Length: 595
Image 1: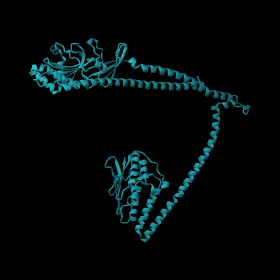
Image 2: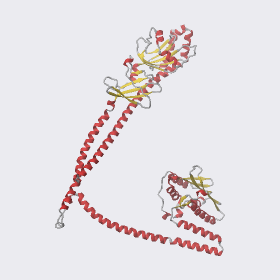
Image 3: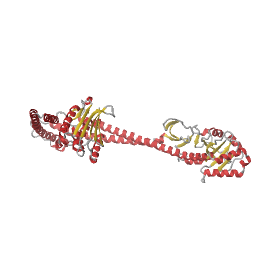
């Protein structure tokens, strides 16, 4: 079944608008959900970092106090004296003295809640907020299983999870950091225990989400998997905390019908891992809300696009149907009387007829312009042919002069005129933009030979070209402007004899490159000229091209370094680099070309 133009337009517009709506909605949802997930992950990372940093600060304070105690010579002497003199060791004044020493370690603000020094032989010295020591202290020391573990660590710190203190009568819950004293074999086995109350740990890791009704929890475990926070009296009441390794900071665990998102961060200093547990539904709630909003916007956009598609198809098809009906009624009898007045109010149709008429007028103008362009091109070719007459006249004149000099015995003058004629022919031949290096060297040598004749006995030159490089293609007029610069500027303030050396060889720094080196013994560049030239070289080495001056306005003898180097950059692109240096006896210019 063949569809009408209105139906086809409507279907095409609908398809296009649907693709745009779906694409825009999908892109919006993808990018927005990605941003929300990244924001949640970043929030979790920041929370974990804050908890870990606060916990490390507490552990660092405890560790600092423990280190001060075990490295205190007074405390060590006190313990050593106790091995030899029990009465002195147990004296009240002696204990009071070293309790005061522990107080100095703890500071006036009680950084640690309790500092305990414990020896295997039953000695116990404490200082802190709770001085109510248990009566059976020696028995408690013998029961403390972690004491042997701390002594086995040889001075390394041991973190004890929250537990009921064995040393106080009130059985408060503390978490501890323990270090052992490093004594010789004949010295007492003793440790220092720094205690902090469980309330400090709770305040440090306060989330505000562990309260009843909250579904976000924070946990702390050690490397053995023991629960460090929150405090649980029995192992049976411990939550099932997942363990995973690798670079991932998050994992997903299914707990019945609920999926939980776990995030973790481990501290290398304390060996404790902080974990945050969150229901996935809470984390994904903003994304679910975004999904609903995106769906609503997509449906609304699709409805609007259908309305617009119908209106556009009707607007385009209506004048075409009207025009078709008018054309079907058109015949020879009413060709002059039939009118399309209604089309005057329909922009598309009226513009169609007007455009066709304007097109015929523009075609006539275009044909006229083409004829005029061809005429101007013929005139330009004719002028170019006339312009070639002057060089031919100069060639003929120089040839006549050379013949006359040969006949009259002026052999040297003959050679000069032949060189000048060869240079003129090389410079006026515009058939190619590039030449071989051998041709360019030959042209430059002829120039320097003429200058050698002009400055008789005051100028000399040398040219050293690797035969393997003679076939390399170079832009025309590459070397002569650089050599001419030495006469115009370099030799202007230098006393003769003058000398120019041109060397072409394989690069000494790059295996796949070759270089042209031009050196003179003149006065070098002036400060301003050197700065301008180095700036130009830096720009060209970086790929920045200045606007070339037109040769027709500056002439071949005034192209200068700017035009020469710019043409090199345009010819070799990024495969060329330049270097300029002022020496004590002139200047040196280097062009390096990578194959």
